[in-house]
Amino acid sequence: MSNKRFDQIGSLLNQLNDITQNIKNKKSHIGGDKDNVGYRDLIKQEISRGKETINNIKKEFSNGFDRNDRIKVKKLQSQFEELSKQFEKECTEIIDLQLRNAIGSKGRSGSLSINSRGDSKRSGSFAGRVQPVVQPHQEYSNQTTQELQLQQLEITLSDAQPVEEMILEEYNNEVKTLVKELVMIKEITGDLQALVVEQGVQIEQANTQVQISSMDIEQANVQLKEANSLASSYRKKIVILVIILLIIIGVVVGLCVGLLK
Image (tube, rainbow, N blue to C red; front, side, top):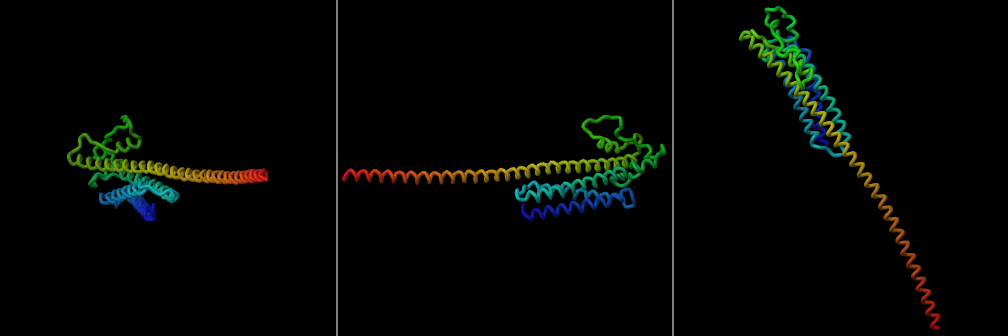
């Protein structure tokens, strides 16, 4: 992995941190004077930027890396995982606040939110007549308790007037959008865990490969020493045999000369 890619990932991590801090700072205004459709659109834009940034960081990591960079990669992955957890936490908290203070997709449903509904308990009032779409005693398979609680934020009214039906629809549309946003954020961070595990396996494989290579080199050195030792022993034997042969030839020549005399 080149230094340019490291710089790119570092820049994206800083961007993710800034987005998370922006979302955190906006939480205090939910349900306050600044809270309106435009303000919530800004929050939605920040969350979308955060998701896009996380996906861009994932792409950088998925492009692979040199085994020599494994220490740097591990450090960046650790930072990425921590920042993503913080992003998920802040998004979950601000979406929860928006759900409890839902104002509707056009900002006209503030009185129907959970935090405002308690102030409108008069039986004849609009907010006092609404009921949850999903009743607590109903059972659903493959759903968490949190998902059921979120679904119960949707409301209905059997005898609603046309204007009331429009406001109810705006309220429920906002709730559905926020719940969908929350699920998408959970999915992104879930994918992140898989990515970190996969990259961790690749790093371990790289470490294992390095260890295997080191073992191969050590084994080759041992074999080379053994080969050198055998070659040296072989040369010594050849020299001894040549000397013996020369001695034998000398003895034979001496005998032949003696006999000729």
